Length: 128
Image 1: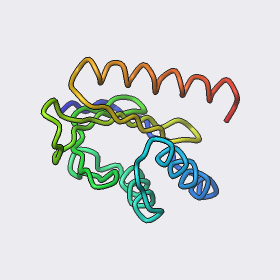
Image 2: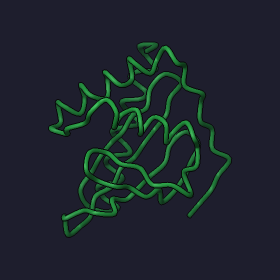
Image 3: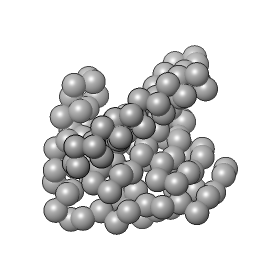
Image 4: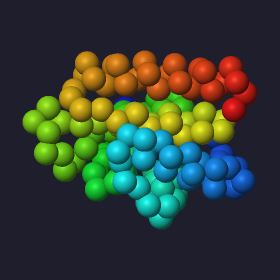
């Protein structure tokens, strides 16, 4: 597991309700069922910043962090039923936590990273 001098911004308490609503709205659009308590547990995982020693859940899937970078990390699903596997890319900006889920391996992960990076750039341009 790679560990860089990761930069994770402190989450403002006022953003947490909005973040939970945003996560739930996005999850519903993608067909992911997430309850507010699950979103709060995920946000707590990020805030604890024990990425190397803990796993996290998104819905029913449990993820283990595989690499850590400045402001983002990658994780693989530990209980997937997909033969090629599943993964997640989590990027933290100053205001948002963006989560990209993908099926497959390195090619899918690369495409997901491009998508989440472009989305973060668009949010930054709109000052959100």
